[in-house]
Length: 484
Image 1 (cartoon, one colour):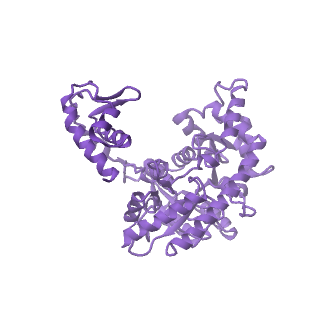
Image 2 (image 1 turned 90 degrees about the vertical axis):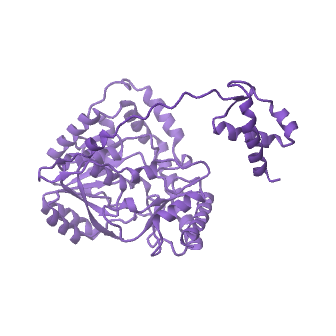
Image 3 (image 1 turned 60 degrees about the horizontal axis):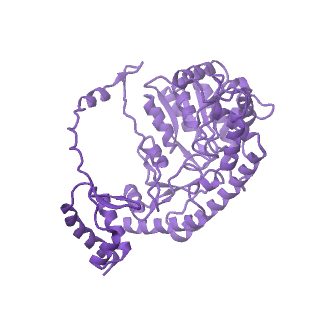
């Protein structure tokens, strides 16, 4: 008899037998059940596990299995239907138009939720633990704890040392960004939230790349803003369409990722950089530059273009930078950089929302980026991301030539795939999870109706190239199932 059938059969017998025991009474030992039913010890263990999962028995290591005690009756369901009316109520913007209050976090949760055990994580948004600088982080945190005043209240703008470091990283050693232009934030997501709340009133339009990062779309909608998509190609956002969108919508904010854009991987070309800034200047607006991938360049990326903020002398750019992506999801330390009165607005909103970033985290960040291990870590990540990128591209060409990415960026941690016409995005995603690989659907990356079905595959959250190869093979099975 197959093991699975033996387990199911024994579980059925024990399910009836357990009714003869009082709550809390001990069942026969595993050895006695093996002798009585002539099955293996593994079968007994698994059958008892089935009953434990059903709540019929309780197993105690070293003591045995006992009939579970009767559960208290389920409480009467609460009537919260009144909340539907309250939560759906809309407020009016300055324009008089209603501001929707619903918040869709599904695109963010797709990259934050850990998949079940055994599922290969192609949907992740952070480095695998093997790539995280855990020893360097632990050492930095230990040194930070010994700093005088490490648990004291920090300046609301952030520690001077950390602001000076961010200023050099963003603007260069003698660039236009100084420590006084920098505000330390609790990671990049918090910085984006603060920037959008500071720059646009509820109900206003905000221009976004299409496709773009779902977390930013969620922030915009949660703030009562209306994301308006502007198409992106392999050279970044199209400036002529951006200028037209500024004129048509009256928007005063454009959010972009000029370097290794998420999800397309595009890098804003040199000839478009000035055109983007000029479009914002002419509209009297701001460019929010989300420089999330600056520390995720691959080993073969070559010289990176400077941030837009490094070329900005008149305060058009509000720059976002974070240490989280290249270290750990829990090192939520980032920065906003801006010139002029807008910095006061950004500071005020952060103070109202969260007072300040905890000082121990800031002290640990200072210790981390000032240690020799920091440079070594960046080089390790650059080399490993290149290896993983090449492995995923090769596996896709071999196993799924119909899905092979047209543009494979030399930075970031993912590839962006267009599904064949007629392929159902949700069907493929569901089939993939069923065969043991989690992928991110493309729909949440679009502010409006997507032109086609897409998938985003991350190679940063897996254990290595072997897992990449196995994940792509599973995805091939899922695609065949979904389209067959």
